Structure formats: structure tokens, C-alpha cells
Image (cartoon, rainbow, N blue to C red):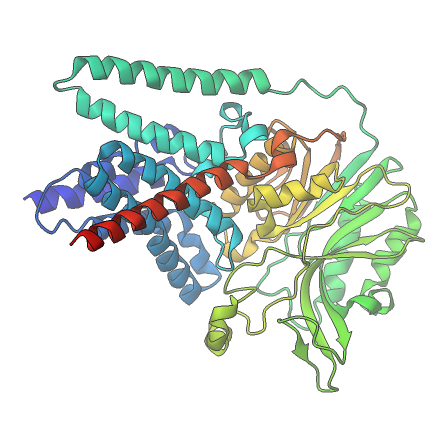
Length: 523
């Protein structure tokens, strides 16, 4: 009977996490979602399989919130969900050990530190998949988290963890500890009052600065699964040009197309000579005030030297990389390129330690050599254009600190180019849109988002969505977007919260190891 109760608690925790996640409106549940799992850790039974219950909770959460990846890769989805689930169990396993050996308070400290360490590593290693970072849970409610301009999503994760611990302790105290109940009630009221009032106070005033021009955002609505069929390139370019011409006027300074909108897969040094792209250059010539920013599939040649780990060898003996890139086109100006840096594991890249599995990944829809990548972000400056753009390609928009580096390099407008059509009409593309609101708050920059199949949008520095085009429709947005040059605290200092707490986590682990050695020595 007790096992059944523990199983029910594990399932309840997973379901609460799903119910609290974007795009569900039940966000407040995130503050109690971990409480049932904390309850399982408190049960004193022989051979308590806490890791198994934790695995069940986190597996349910991962599956219930990211199942839509299946639409683009079946085997990849199973691998991603199982890997992420195992990794998420490790902080809880550490919490359980510390709680048993050193007591409740140190256990809670370990949970917070280990989870923050996990999230920080998950932002920065080769199997990075930070989609379920706890701080992302508030994407639907930018009014709650205006302080992200100081903390980034790490502040939201910390808020969730502390909130869950205090709510759980409050629940335990209700039966027989009135003084503790009052103290915890005051602490919780204070925590939420300070957080929400701080957010209200930090809400930026409406930008009264006149926009330097308007931005036209194109949503072509091309089926990604038929996009690369032979003979489709010319029709796709023609549609992009036609949609663009329907909205461009003399005040238009920037034209934004989505990820891989230019899909003829040409060498970067031959883009101007490709016959499929002549209508694009003709469009730029007709509107000399206009800068075109587009996603592009391309190749970069390295000659006879294999310059990167991902470089492939052509039949003539030269080396090259395939690039998921962005290109800037303006009449009379040289082309500028940025190659996507944050690549999707398994689909666009393989970690070095998994290269022996490359043939298997290729068989199931992944990539063998992987795409090439830029070593760092890049801000596009074009002569005569007031918009200094951050060419953020798809998955890169999930990385707060990385997006901040575009702004450090001068970007005054975040331009997100994405193709979310691989997932179909699922929560995936809607979650991705909501996460863009977090980047707007962190950087206090306007966001222009061009999504191939939707949802394209304009987002202000407070995270409010001003205009969108719905899913599965060819459409354009024209909007007068102001610019800003201020740098937020978060842009200046990045993920300092993650780094600080990760250091504490490592100190805790070192101390635990020292205690273990001491016990062994004493025996």
C-alpha cells in the first residue's frame, strides 16, 4: 500500500510539472510541483528506491512537455528524453544522499546547488538541451519576471526551488508546529511580494524614441519536409520576394526572412553567382535603402586544409563545412555571414565522444560530420542602416547568456530566424515563441522573429508581444521598431548566479568526498 502511495506521489509531481509548463496557463503550480517528490524523500522505508521514483517523475515531465520532437525524429526523441531524464535525476540523488547523511537543511542546500549546477552545465556542454530550464516556466507571464534583466533565467530557477522547499515545509508544519507555520507563511508572502513588486518597479517606461524605420518580417509557410525537393528553390525565392514586395515601402530599413529561407545550398563565396538567388539581389537593387537578413543553407570551403573537426572532404580533395547560416544582403555592400553556433545535439551536431555512432545517427535522420559553426556570436552592421542586428538562428534563442553576447557586440535589435515547422502544430513552436520573450527582458531589446511556418512576432523589451502572424499561414508583418543601446546588468555579467552557486555545489561535493575519506580512514 505504501509503495502505491509513493508511486502516486511520483506521478503527481510529474503531472504538476507538465501542467505548469508553457503553454499551459497553470504556471503557479510550478511552485508546488516538486513537493510530492520531496515527500517521497522523507519516507523511511527499507530500500527506498528514491532514484526510481525520481526517474518516473522526470520522465513524465520530459515526455509530457517535449513529446513533439517525435514529429521530426523518433529515435532522437527517445534518446533525448531518456538522456535528459537521467541527468535530471542526478541533482535529486545528491539531495537524497546529503539529506540522509547531514540533515534536512544541508540536504535542501545541496538540492538547490546541485540543480543549479546541472542547469549551468546543460547550457554549456556538447549535449546541451536546456529547454526545460525551470526559469523558462514563467515565459507566459513577463510581468512577473522583469527582474530577469538582472538575473536571467537563473533567478527564476532559484525562485522555483526555494518556493517548492518552503511550501513543502509549510505543509509539514500545519499539523503540529504553529510557530513554524507562521514563520514560513511570512517568508513565502515576503518572497512573492518582493518578487512581484520588484518586477512591477522594473517595468521599463514606454519607449518614446521615434523608430528609425520599419522592419518587414516574412513568414513564407514552406513545408520543411518538401523544402529541399529538386526544383523547389526558384518557387520559394519567388514567394519570398513577392511577400516582401507587398509590404516594403520607402521607410523600410530591414527585411527579415526565416531560417534556411535561401535553400539552394551554395558555396558562400559563390552566393552572388547562383541563378536561383538573382531575384533576391534584384530586390535589394530596387530598394537601395533596404538590408535583407535571411537564413541560408550554404557551404564554406577550406581548400586543402581540414580546418575544423566537422570538415568533410570533397571528391577533389578539398575540405568544406555545411553551414546553417545567416546572410546580410544590401545593394553595393559586401555579403556578411554568421554560421549558427549553438547546434541541436544529434540532429545538427555530434559530441566528440559520440562520433563513433555517426553512421547510426545518419540512419535515423541525424548528421554524421555535423554542421560547421561559428566560434562566437556576431552583430551585423551595415553601412547606412540604423539597425545593428543579432542573427539568432532557431535553437540559439534558448540561450540567455549567449544572446547577451550579441548585445555586447553592439546589437540594438534581436532578430530571430527559425523554422519550427518540423514539429507540426504542437506545443513546440508555441513554447519557442514564448522563450523569445525572456530574451527581450534580459537584454531590454526589441525582438523581430521570423518563423517559416509561424509564429512570427514583434516583442518589446518588456516581453510583450505586439504583433503576430498565426501558425500555418503565409504572411508578413510590418512594424516600426525603436532601437536601444543600453546594457542590462545581465548582459554585462551573464550567468553569474549559475556560476556562483555551481562553485558552492563543487565545494559541497569536495567536502562530502573529504568526509567519506575521513570515515574510511578512521575505520
